[in-house]
Amino acid sequence: MTTPTIAVLGTGRIGKMHAELIARQVPGLDLDAVYDVFTEGAQAVADELGCRRAESIEEVMASDVDAVAICSSTDTHVDLVVAAAEAGKAIFLEKPVSLNLEEVDRAVAAVKSTGVPIQIGFNRRFDAAHAAVKQAVADGSVGDVHMVRITSRDPAPPPIEYINVSGGIFCDMTIHDFDMARFVTGSEVVEVYARGAVRVDPAIGEAGDVDTAVVMMTHENGAITTIDNSRQAVYGYDQRVEVFGSGGMAVSENPREHTTEIHTADGTRQQNIPYFFLERYIPSYLAEWSGFLDGLASGTMPVTIEDGRAPLVIGLAAWKSVREDRPVKISEIG
Ligand SMILES: NC(=O)c1ccc[n+]([C@@H]2O[C@H](COP(=O)([O-])OP(=O)(O)OC[C@H]3O[C@@H](n4cnc5c(N)ncnc54)[C@H](O)[C@@H]3O)[C@@H](O)[C@H]2O)c1
Image 1 (cartoon, protein in one colour):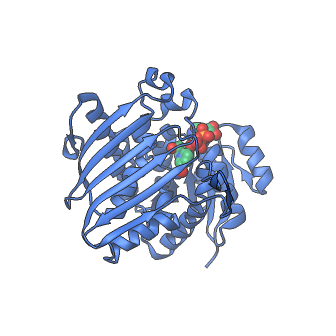
Image 2 (cartoon, rainbow, N blue to C red; image 1 turned 90 degrees about the vertical axis):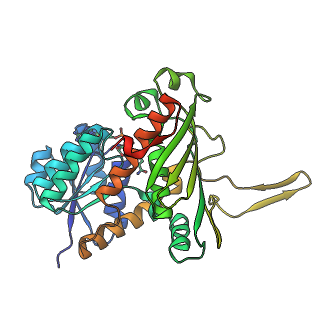
């Protein structure tokens, strides 16, 4: 079998990272081309990685490339999914599918009618520690799941221009945690109660968003999940997941930059936790690409388009909960 080829669409922060990983560290997948409306950015990535810079989306879709990685701004995702599906390309799609549920359903319809394989970029599922928590639930070690606690805090807020188009904290940031809650419990969310506050930057509040949030969710199986988010944890990228049940508990803790501890008369110091997602999650992005290749070979992708839709519905329910100051049933959203 020949090695599958891929074009990366969007060479911003995450697209450049994926292109670099594919070119340098993913055996079994060849980076054919990159494309970005920001021509200079795409050209720099193409030059660095020794691949083609496509002139247009049409050129990519008409080429014989096997797959596309859609890593462009969120508002471009669905048009690109539809174009790729119509061209018969396998798709890797960064989260979120869209901020608009009708648009997500347009992507779902395109994927279903053409039957192209698609994987959504919920990379945290591929983090070894979080995946081991999921495994402990799946193999019965934790017993019946009673509660899940997810802590997810960024080191610093993104620029206000990003906040303005992000869909707000629940659809941009917490969406990873909604996915994690579904992933570790294996149970759909049926109700959401969310509170938000502006504790970090008043400009985030002026943009209509919050920077501090707590979400409580009830799952179909009766388990309860709580999530806490902050846009600013001064000590780094704080990512922890705990599942508690009748048989015990499984917890994924933050890794340290390295394992040295400094002991003095004043106390003991450990190394910082990783600064942000590029420092913490590279192994998960690599595992995500292994999952994509396994999915292409087996015909079953590990993170489906439905897995892309469900957390957006939860995010929209969380916003409704904050705005209407009440618990919101998922069935109210769709
Ligand atoms: N899974 C993760 O850990 C993770 C992390 C960060 C971002 N993301 C997601 O990745 C996507 C991109 O985020 P980012 O931080 O890289 O943003 P970014 O702004 O750094 O990059 C977006 C790029 O898309 C390009 N672009 C815009 N319209 C385009 C089009 N029609 N065709 C091709 N390129 C186009 C822009 O020129 C820009 O270079 C977002 O959907 C975001 O939610 C996922």
